[in-house]
Image 1: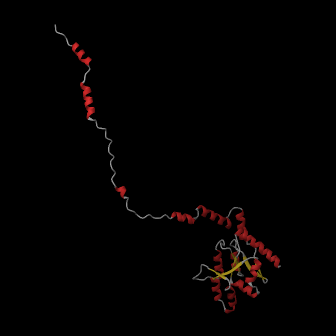
Image 2: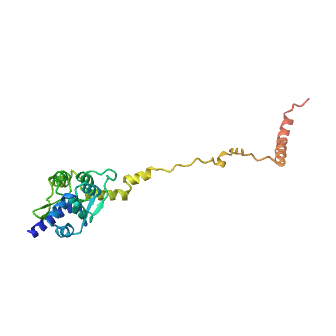
Image 3: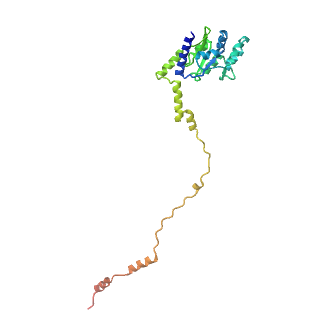
Length: 253
């Protein structure tokens, strides 16, 4: 039976690895009901869960789960001691704690981006977890830990991705990296959109100067020698002209 359970767990984990990008170390969020059942059935979570997963595991819980146990009677003190050995993940309810089931659901958000496993015996929480795609569920039955098969919501999500109706988390991450390389992401656009405001500066003193008028091109001055030559040429008359004038005068008889 143990070999069959490990094969079943290996098959289920590979499903989440391939379709939802789960990687080691696997993060397991545990509530008080799971610890109570493990304590009752003498199951050592910290030792048996890594063997069952055949990989590295990080066991964790939240502050709201711890606060809920503090309000319970003293005979639940052993459950609190078990949870204190696990890592505590920060939740959104630092000032006003909420019930453990509500807190764990808020950690999953809509798509379980941090790839959490949920370990619980709470039926209401189990029903709510199955409505979120990509959330593996662990519970205890017959003195053994069992990794539940993928929910119908997870199967439908994978089918939609294969048909091209949705984008898988791996594709989203690759698209985001490509956008960052090309400078098309929101962060890069925001950085580009924020332009530095220039401080008002004084006008350039050179631009305030009046424009100098360009001098008109002057014609070359005539020299005295040229004037004398021209005047002399006008006064002179050809010799043939005087003889023709003399001959044209009438003679007296």
